[in-house]
Length: 273
Image (tube, rainbow, N blue to C red; front, top):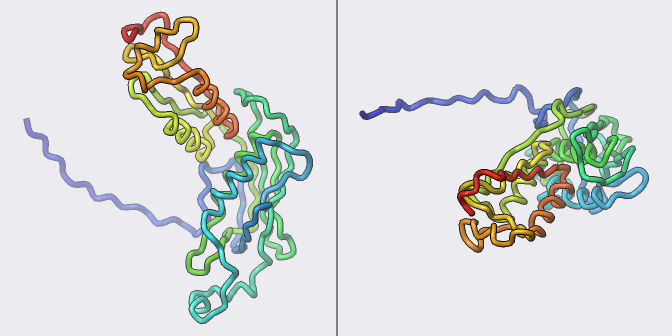
């Protein structure tokens, strides 16, 4: 039997506005029509009080994610003027830093009941050069940083960063406590770099669980110190995970607000042994 597939024409509606898209959509938000210029710096993100190694690492990480391009001072030459870049003189003063207030700076591993709520405010007042954010926990602050990174866009014509739609007022909290993705390395081995990249992608979408289906009938790639011959059931000697490897992934995930839930199918599903 031959099955003929007819070509399908796809059409995509244009966005209804030029406002930045926040993913996932926050619980509540309001915005305006003002465009604010953003000037990046090494100390752009900071805590209002206290210290947090987890957030200090996140500040450095999100500086690269939010500001990936080299930004020049606003140009007023003829080419830039033709593109409207000279209109900066009538715009509000640039945003130069983000100040975050976190109620609880504990860095224990995230749990099902961890509070990930946050608020974010960006004024359209030229006298206010700061972005203000607040969160109950460091993990809520991570979601706040992700939202801000989605609001910032780079204008390639003018060589500067901007936030459109000011003033922004966002109050957000996840609708579901468990928001996860499963990977199945028992059936399809993934190198550690790929597992870490998957964890990174979860944080970009504000997902908080990596369900790691590690062993099954097809392979047993995990190191067991009590039964060291078990991982002879791996697909290949090079396709295995040491206990230190898994601990490193768990820590990589914690720094991004992601819990790792490892699934072992035992005592059944033992053909790989």
